[in-house]
Image (cartoon, rainbow, N blue to C red):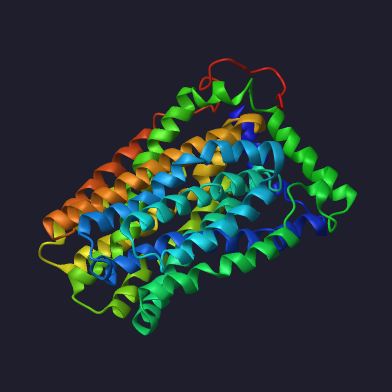
Length: 444
């Protein structure tokens, strides 16, 4: 089966019909902007914390760390129900509602002054944004084949580092001009306007797109169905969620996200302390790792689609990222410049494998369960994000320096790299109990 799937992954079978080529310009730019807006409203908390959120609200550093982490607890809560709704009903409608709700909640972050109300707001913001990743990834599996999927996923997830890149360069200056509270409002409102654009231009399936002709729809659907025919069926999501494959992926992604989101939320604070610069310069320095991340994501996804072997484009990069975080831990005591260079390497390599990773899930599980498993994996990533952001922030507050936090992130990312090596090499055949390797895929 693996050899047949790798044959499908080769670029020699690329579509030539104009309507099929238009998918890349009609769908992915809107998907990219939508995910970017979601990331604006989750990543700006780190800049607010660096700009004095705790002192303005008269809360402790530990409570500030909790506020940053509560987003991810809310993000955990609705993943699987949201994925099930998207698969059975409509990913398009789900994300439309999510855009409206997270735009309002993100703006309220700059309005609310009471700690517990702000905690509730951050929790609900996470819950509203929990629909975005499983819904988007499900949508892309209906529009892009295996040979295209890592690149399509990367153009979605690149909204993460690209957003942090421009936010890092711009948000510091905005905060300096209007304050962190008004910055939350300014950066939250565009999601409300974008919700209308999303609803106008995105469709759940090729059959619903007026711009695609019948022959193009048929060619795309036949290619997608051939891929499904090569994947062993799984009776239902309950069986898939208990499988060793799903559990291993969930644990791996949990540890990966401990590193990634500890890095994202506390990088501005760490740089500001280490470099002793103002908030504007801190923003510029914070943007450098994300520029490296964008470049590496595009390169890795392209090679991954050509190869069809996803794990070899995941674990080596995470292994080096973990070692780079450890290098930052070791050198931070005596050289900010050396420690920062290690951070650039770590940030770029932690992001680079995202496209191949989520493509791998859809390629190892059939369509009737892949969305729910993706949601479970992403939900465990949210728990890792909660643990990473809270633990790194707490260690920062307790020790007064970033060293202990980076040691924690280093260990988590190194173990996540090793877990990828434990995945079965031949896909779902031996990974999911209760499957019929010879049967056609079942749709619920």
